[in-house]
Image: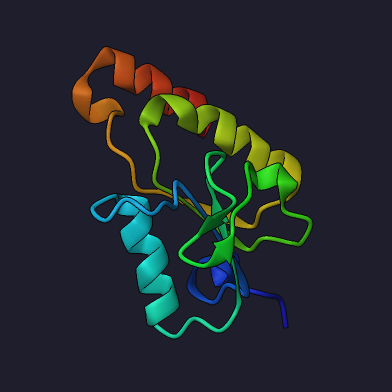
Length: 120
């Protein structure tokens, strides 16, 4: 039986959180905490170039530094930095990505152009 194309979103074996940090109110902090406290049993990779560890886990400076397959990347960083991260995800063979950031089509032409860059 063929795997469903959404399997890596709904049943990932590994998750990278781009924007994971120690700042209490950041989206990346909350996402990483929820994954850990929610009982996720797979591999978790915090991505933050400013830290060696995040929430007690080894942190990676970029997605390409992770030397294991990544099923899902959750991206919680500023919109302007997302196209480069998405390109890196594609080059690294990431299965799926979820972008939690604002600053795209909802803010007008500039945001729409950024959104188009990601989608293309």
